Image (tube, rainbow, N blue to C red; front, side):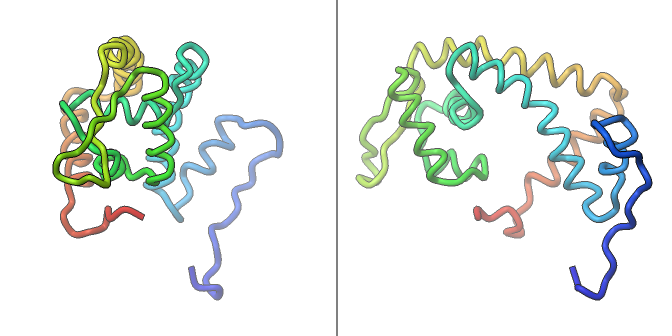
Length: 173
């Protein structure tokens, strides 16, 4: 932002703990109207589930994201997981190593690239994925319950458009 351009006008909301009014004041800010709300929804959607997974199974957000990606393929590389998730290589590597140590993933030599390994979900990893994906599906249904079927279809179309870009906007950072 240009230093001569004023920032958003502060909203007169009483100080104190988060109230619906305080949350609305932040979410209705025009500075990052869409990005912030998308992040807010993503955190509300996943936060409680990841906390429970960590407490119950010792699998946090980075590990579950890797497990989620690996469950969709026979094999893949950690680099591919990073490309699918936009997560940093170091975070993916730590998560893969933890999942291997827990017996939820297996690493195999990559015949196409000796510098990387192929990861594969183990039987225990598949069982954990099958159990832990259900709370996400239930939470998604609860989140979307305020939308009509037409609105859900429209949201799906818009999200597909945003996530299927080919203009390089989504290049890994």
